[in-house]
Amino acid sequence: MGPLLPNNLIPMEWNSIIAILIGIVFGFVLESSGFSSSRKLAGLFYGYDFAVLKVFFTAAAVSVIGVYYMDYLGYLDITQLYVHPTYIWGAIIGGVIMGVGFVTGGFCPGTSLCAVAIGKLDAWIYVVGIMVGVFIFSELFPLFEPIYDGYFLGNITLMDSFGWNPYWVIFIFSIIAVVAFYVADWVHKKVKKVFY
Image (cartoon, rainbow, N blue to C red; front, side):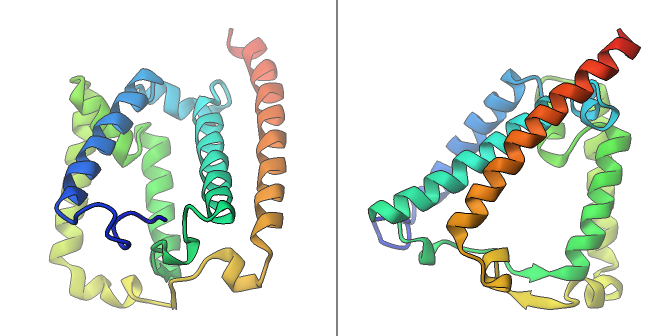
């Protein structure tokens, strides 16, 4: 029963190797999907291309349904899965910075590295900007630390916070995804008449 590493079903030494292989496959899928194009990625915000929305909604829905279904069948113990700790101020400020960077640069950190791998100049500039930001943050960390560690809520999920039934959350999320796909297609048709 999974997870594989905590239950010693695969040795710890394989952890990094498996992570690298998953990263390579993920990068290949991103490039194959056209996500190394800043124009395609920024299209979500301007209403002319909703591939990003559809891919990530589909990935999230398939993942959460798969995880809970494997838990239901006994192949996976969901209580052993790692949940990243929640720091509210860090999440809000980081989300705003990431969102502004995504809209202005047309990349997120993962897609920018994918675009660097195929030699796109705008992605190189974006990655250099990320490195400069990381350097500034690390050098000024004592100044940012109260915000970074601010409003710590622990390793929680929305279901834990509100006491929601996870199966209802998954069902509602799936409905939201279907509605989002429909709205995205409707907006795309309207914008297509303007731009094309």
